[in-house]
Length: 100
Figure 1: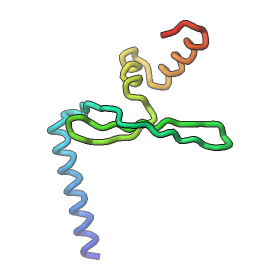
Figure 2 (figure 1 turned 90 degrees about the horizontal axis):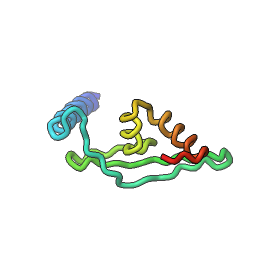
Figure 3 (figure 1 turned 180 degrees about the vertical axis):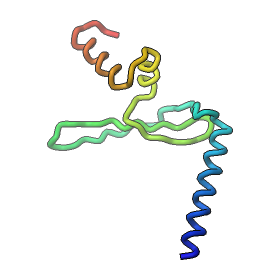
Figure 4 (figure 1 turned 30 degrees about the horizontal axis):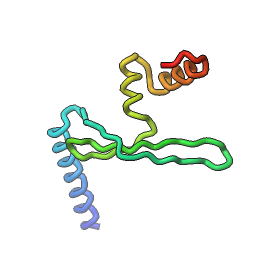
């Protein structure tokens, strides 16, 4: 039991140190994300598929997975919309033939 508490305390301490170093390299979480891959999750029988994008920061090496394409998300924020709103609008434009 004592070892578990010491181990948990060490894990918390190391997580704090990682966050501190990450903040020094990429202040205010301004990461320079680079797409390193994508994975397709298909729910058979439901007809629904999801794309999971994997990114890695060029500066600090942090990796993350998200269902949002970060380039599209940045474009949506530039237009004052959420990712979902922007994708829906682009889908509607494609249906109407307006293009982008």
